[in-house]
Length: 291
Image 1 (cartoon, rainbow, N blue to C red):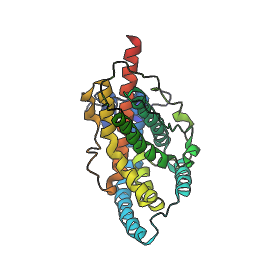
Image 2 (image 1 turned 90 degrees about the horizontal axis):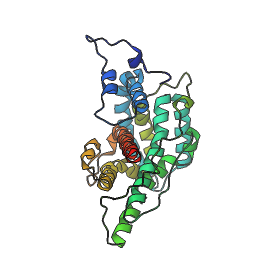
Image 3 (image 1 turned 45 degrees about the horizontal axis):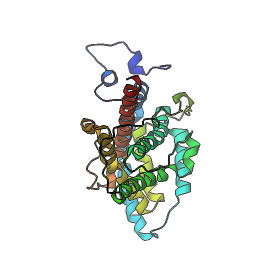
Image 4 (image 1 turned 90 degrees about the vertical axis):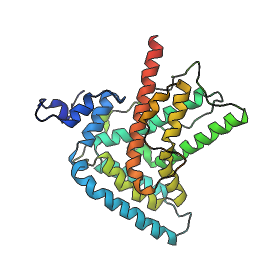
């Protein structure tokens, strides 16, 4: 690790143990060390500790206000391209390197997980991978495409299974070829004087903007795509016959949509669940290749 986080470089004091060091050393949840270090560096930042408690209620208040305001505009009112340009601009100038790295990784990891399911299904289906090389690539409606990809994948997969009279089941021969570490480097992320905003604060700030500049259908779909975490977890657990790993999924239940007011917090959980699922698949691939 080139630049270890503060909680790793400080001396260990039994009378004042660092909670971040404890979480980093703990191995009960699967995460690569580099990802865990970035996640905990972001989580232990001053931005998250002091700014997030003020931003979260304000952001949720704006979600309510924008919902009321949008009752007076056409239902198809949308400025997705402008939204994504604003998001990319904000990420490059105000968001921490760790948060930006984790956001970019999420698109790659999510695409790999869907490809894993689609390739190993008894009725294989193609996927539409999203693999942004940098923050500027997000301008191409990347967040919206991510949500559309997820719902379209669930529909295509289950339609193919139904059409062929099949059910998803444990696969005897597993193809892990799509599971790999993205070619994204933390050191390549923007590091300007204003790049201080943590991941959770950034998401809470961007969520009302997301609602304002997309149609109600697009925003509702984005918020409730998080409910599919359990669905995707079940698919993977079924293929691997590893149901015990569903304990890591926390955005359930998929058939009970939740209020959009908590979308920001649930989005963070969604990102962490994806990282853990990808880490598990990476470990399973290593076990197969070493056998």
